[in-house]
Image (cartoon, rainbow, N blue to C red; front, side, top):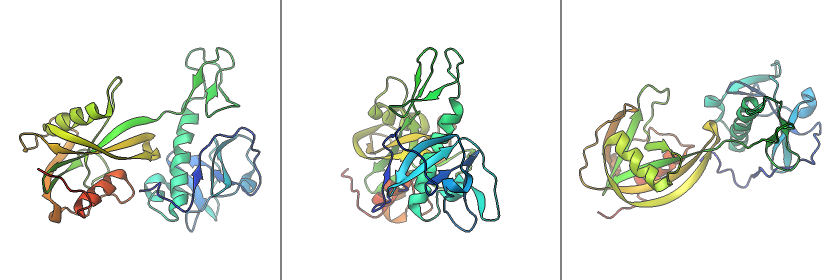
Length: 274
């Protein structure tokens, strides 16, 4: 997955005491594209531009990474690379840093003013938050919990394809948690809403911070309970099809939790008793 960057380490602990240095790395975004070296995925340095609107983002292998609100100019050596491209590029630790930085960038841009009194928000000095100096309202980064569901039937895995989305590869059933809903209840609801199946024996697998869309993905394996014929119910999918373990296509993402879960089942590392 994209965050599996060991032995590299992204440390996202907040720090209000750091001061930018010329050799620190700099993140600048144009919509959903990051400013990088023109000949590969490498971040510019703070000293290349010396912007005065920096937010401390995190450190990567001990090097501080700063985020600017401004769209900085391109040059012969620097260009903006769209997220759909850079998140699959190497080195992976830089790609992961860019996705996390882009998530923070969206948050800062969407929370310039207080929603209660319209006062301009300021950075907190104690935590990753924005504070209204007038009414003291606090805004934290938004993270959306969602489930990724591998529905199995013995040696078969249910794969899906989205309708009307640019992403055309195979995927698993997925959906966002509603207010007041547990992750397990989200699994049951989303499977029923999308493919009309009941499930049982839910087993949590692992999570992924999918900063590409500000999501925290929670992966579950489960077994079909009762009828096995999928029915596309809510229009979100254009395909839901069972594949035997040995016939699962390899057309899926290799940086996502979805891809890892498909690969684990496909390779026999996840087995299910009927």
